[in-house]
Image 1 (tube, one colour):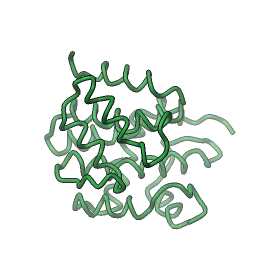
Image 2: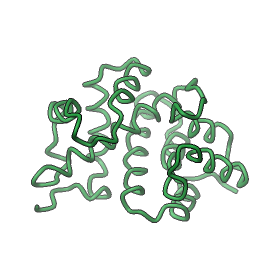
Image 3: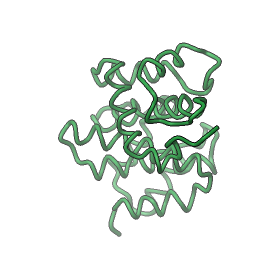
Image 4: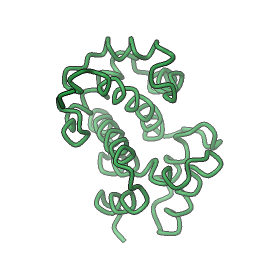
Length: 190
């Protein structure tokens, strides 16, 4: 079996029917690929890992199962352990520490893409392209906004990468703007 983006998409599509979860996977993939390019790393491997990071979440949303069940499925199908380990490390509850740069980038981008998506969706124009870093930071301070997004993970993610929070938000926002149409965030009228 070839471990390509196409193969990863097949796994995601098989296990994830919810369009919003698929869009989340695409957003994280775009952000992680951007970091891979910026850092001179393997963009394909990093992108595949990001695309698969939550593929089991729809079926196994309980933290006792996610992403453990996904890791089992990927192992059964022969996916590389490096990808599986990175997926396991994207949540603190797994007990798998983030050691590689890819693991740290995946963690840093995951929650932030959710916050950025939520910030775009509450805009009257729902246009990601008009969103600013200052707006995202303002929303980040509002505890009632996008309650399930772990702000501490966003801050810690940037810290673990050694990147200024504003710069990190700008990088992820720019990556997501590059696929805004795939995310359905290109200026839908309210």
